Length: 165
Image (cartoon, rainbow, N blue to C red):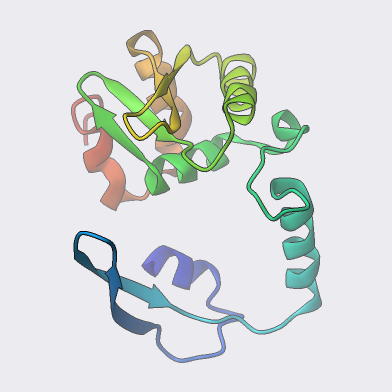
């Protein structure tokens, strides 16, 4: 959050982020969630960016999708942010979460990871029937070399056994 605050500091409209605690009730239990929010100024450049994202990453039903030109827009910085935001280590593999995407979209991402970065990977389905990407151990060193220059220090713990800090 501090990183995002820093990145957007020149267009943030409030002095400090707001903190929220809420209870989300499910059938079996109540889950307490915590969120931090901040707002940016309404600028035309954000509208253009949002429109590009919406048209590229969401279909007409507002369901997430992987754009056809993902190979052209995805970078090693994108991969690092994905890793920091929505990944974990499972036994001996890095897992990139893709729960909101179709299997076809996940396969498009897998192909892009292989072609653009040379990363060997596999698709697996979770017990909840979500498709996810596993970076195979043969590509761990390459994966870390690709993302490490862009990792924030607070995320080194996710790769601690592979890098010397």
